[in-house]
Image (cartoon, rainbow, N blue to C red; front, side, top):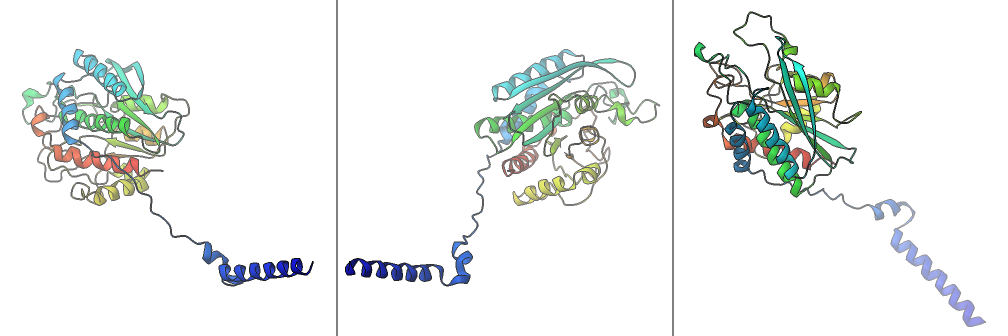
Length: 337
């Protein structure tokens, strides 16, 4: 009996001593449990500019992708198949929309979705149609000539096809929807006397914003790519993007600088541009920015000398610009949680 009592007493003192040593006194419990924060390590894929360049060239090879044309139909089929080959769930919105002059246009919005069950989503978009008229060409004889649209249309799509290829190989944390908007570039031509009508542009994105491919669709934010393949491109912070989605602009521009592409993305305000991000912001109520060039030293246009001219061809597409934009987009989407 005595030995048992002694053993219990000894155990109690030992336990008390252990408690005091481990806790360091009554006021140190939280300090003992504190652990240093571990930074999240993100494996961001490497954007392949050669691959994106090939996707741009493949689109241009169809010819001008003007709505109602055979080139438009064939290229649309190609884009659908590419997204399917890259593992996306593909939806299409096919309908007839009326141009500013009443011309009925066969519209085809093409949507590729990854992780459609994931409620946390990002939206990436570009337009895939071509301008029916080279109405900013220095030669008036070319005004009624459709443009190849290598930069104005095909470059953004080419970048997003490479992004889709990377997503198939490595899924980001969030679901991603890639939308190729149609009938963006059928707005009132410069050679007409009509008063400028902003609603004559971006018919495909207006349609989608009113009737999205998924009921009650929502995304954390959107990124629009337009003319992202030109040489020496400079992407200032577009005006409507600053108005509707300033936090998204800061996020994207900071990632560009961190990745070493600051010369392409100066942290300065640019012009206001009517583009596909406007319906996304105003109608769909999704904060969306526009990555679009603003060339202050261009003689023909702030969008560059090839904009809406017959010179918007593969000769003026630069892999370095495709890389800067594509890698920036990957840095953004793979760092979202």
